[in-house]
Image 1 (cartoon, rainbow, N blue to C red):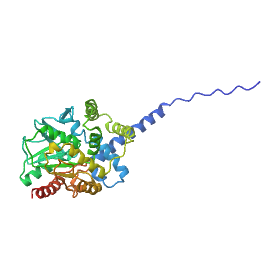
Image 2: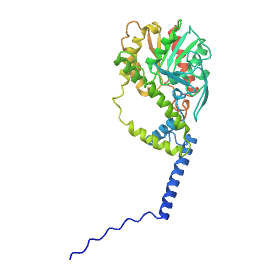
Image 3: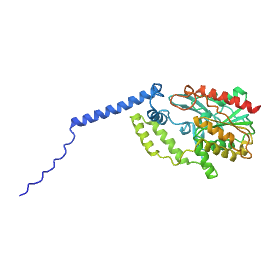
Image 4: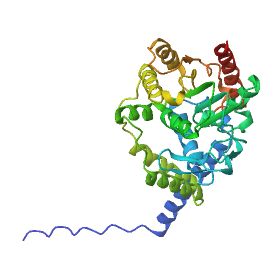
Length: 348
């Protein structure tokens, strides 16, 4: 008669010794991740600019996402929702700090970072976080330095993350009595908002529900304490996989320049045919083509002179925070000096 097939033996469960070894190895890995991450961001100067880019980029992403804390626009003590502009600065005072700076932000009743309200300034500054003075005191930011240098009264209509469209909508809200010139600080991330505005023919407000979700997410991240650094690495990996694909190519510098001119044209009545001095905070090598396109393009009717100035060209690594891409005081001083020269030429 045929032999019976062998009866498979049940797999032996992990013994207590094996489970102990696994637990010990896991604990060592987690402790290693926690200590290594702490050390990396305690002494960033030891590796920034010294390791290959593919290694430095995720470390910078980790810093901006989990170490530096929430951007000012997502800090409930500093900002509040706005149905048209997504958010605005909250009147009063708040502390905006990260591992690289610690600043007090005072906000007026008209939701600007200012000590007093001027209705008829000499110059209006439009921009985002660079013009707001991210990471420095208000008096150390380039608009205040520029005003002191030239003896001007300034209004700084600048909010972190705003594109050109929202900057101009904020200018419209201020309903200033008059001004003599506009300094417009451009950044590459303005391109998405500006392009969306032209395609829609109007500004389409973002979802306040999504804004609140983001505020809540930053709050949850800041409240983490148990194995926070390890959990943050897992969060960064998940986020990276979810955002691997961009919907469409980023517009080139020439397209960004043409789009900017169209946006300025749409708000020509708010600009009152005053000269607009344009500089870019982060164009890098693309700046030459961006400025050349602005200079050579035919200006739309109703728009005043549009003058370009590569005011951030002399910014160097020591003028930036080590991990944060924003300017230290020395960077603001360089930009203010270049803008002062440009504004003096306009007056002449």
